[in-house]
Length: 226
Ligand code: ADP
Ligand code: ADP
Picture 1 (cartoon, rainbow, N blue to C red):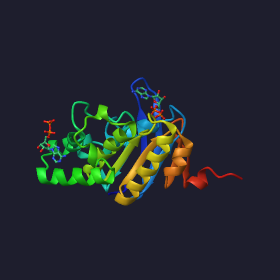
Picture 2 (picture 1 turned 180 degrees about the vertical axis):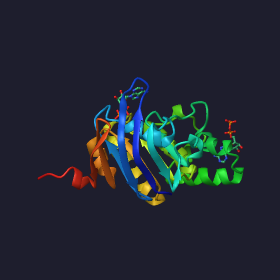
Picture 3 (picture 1 turned 180 degrees about the horizontal axis):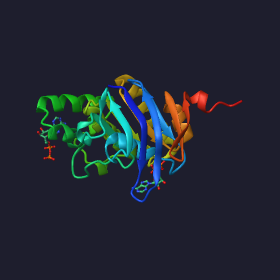
Picture 4 (picture 1 turned 120 degrees about the vertical axis):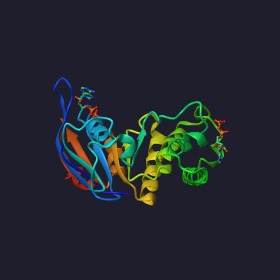
C-alpha cells in the first residue's frame, strides 16, 4: 500500500506523437483512481509508464516516496491485471497463481498460504488443479486478479480488465473487484473507456482528452446532471 504521485508526466513516442502531456495526479494511499476517456486519449500510455512498460519521457512517478522512473518493472511493487488475462495456458490455476512467487524464491509454505488465501477470496478453491481452458471467462478473470493479489503489491494497475466479458459478467466482476480492493486497501489505477464502469468503481475519476487532464474529481462532481 502506498501513495502514487504522478508529476508533470509526458510521453513522446518515437515519431513525435505526444500521447500524454504534462499530467499530474496525486493518488492517496488506498485510493481507487479510474482513468477514463475516448480511445487514443492516452490512458493506457499513462498506465504503462507507471507499470514500467513504457519509458517516461518527462516528469516523475513516485510510488510510496520512491521515484520509480528508472526502476525495473519487476521491482516496482505493482501488479497489473490485463483484459486478456495473461494466464499460462499449460499451467494449472494453482501454478498460475504461484508462478510469480516461485520465481521470487518465496518459500513453499508461504506460497501455499498466499495461494490458498487468494483462492478463498476469489472462490477459486475448487478449480486449483484445472487449466485455464477449463474455466469460464469470469473464473479466468478471477485467476488474473488472484495473480495480482498473491504478490501483495503496493498498487494494482488495471488495463481494461473486463472488456472481454459479456455485459452481465462485467457488472458482477466490477463489483467483485471493488469489494476486494476495499478489503485489501491496495492503491489502484484502473483504465476504462466505459463511463458507467468508471463511475461505479472510482473514488476519483481522471478524464483524459488528447493526452491532457480534462477533469478530475469524484464521480458525481465529474458527471453531474444539472
Ligand atoms: P488509449 O489507451 O486512451 O486508447 P493510448 O495510450 O493507447 O490511448 O494512445 C495514445 C496515443 O498514443 C494515440 O494517439 C496512439 O495512437 C499513440 N500511441 C500509442 N502507442 C504508441 C506507440 N507504441 N507508438 C506510437 N504512438 C503510439
Ligand atoms: P505440474 O503438474 O504443472 O508439474 P503440480 O500441479 O504437480 O504441477 O504442482 C507443482 C507444485 O505445486 C507441487 O509442489 C505441488 O505440491 C504444488 N501444488 C499443486 N497444486 C497445489 C494445491 N492445490 N495446493 C498446494 N500445493 C499445490
